[in-house]
Length: 377
Image (cartoon, rainbow, N blue to C red; front, side, top):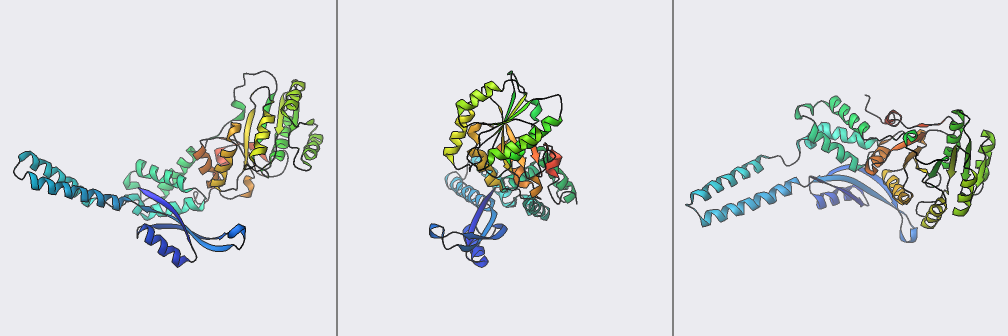
């Protein structure tokens, strides 16, 4: 079994000493980096050395089990030296002790250089420690020991598992039992490109033809120029744009727009930690007469931990799946794959540029996997 740690110190030497003292000589340091830590009231930042890694508990566990067996052996010898049945039990105890003594202190795969090389590859691709643990467990449980020295084979299997862990949700496959317009709502933090994504979706629906009637509604009345920006997009695409500020206004607008085929709703771009604005936005969206298609919009380049935090903050909206934006701004996809695997949530759309309507498409595994490095070598 493994446990992970994060420690910090003033210098690298102090960090190494701290880790060895706390976790023992078997502790493995995976990464060392410098971070600036804020001081009192956010002032006087201080440069710290931060180390992350893991250590094995197997040696101490084995020692404890062995000591326990020794005590049981002494008890049997002292109490029943001549009892035939007890001699048989003692024999079994000795056999168990012998197996423990000969067992390796760590899993075989963890001792192999191939495992460390693969772990480095996953870290270089920004996969989280939880996801790396998931991959390591699959290697240990599913691959034959004789194949663990073949790095190309192991790497190809890991790539397959990564692909299998990505869930794609086709937005066109959602069953729609209700009559009336198809309503699509985008939520997400500020700066992820919701407004531009709404415009791209509207333009693409227009290009599909079939004389679809499309309407855009914005409830983002807090960001200066947000409504005007959407109106400019609407004028270019010949798509009407309306603004609402309350649940009643949205409800009335939706009744007026029953003749439209698709209604796209742009929402407030606020921090996910601004709970008051999130609650206000949720209240406005309650004006939808039926449950809309609701997508959480997140930028590709953020850390896995931030991705998961945003997903948790927006979970009350009960989003159907994720729209991944700004994929062109990152060369690593491990953070995204780690997060959606942890969330067990699918991806429906991907954007990779600012051009309207070109830089948006339905998500595919290939589009995400091409942002991994080192697997095609």
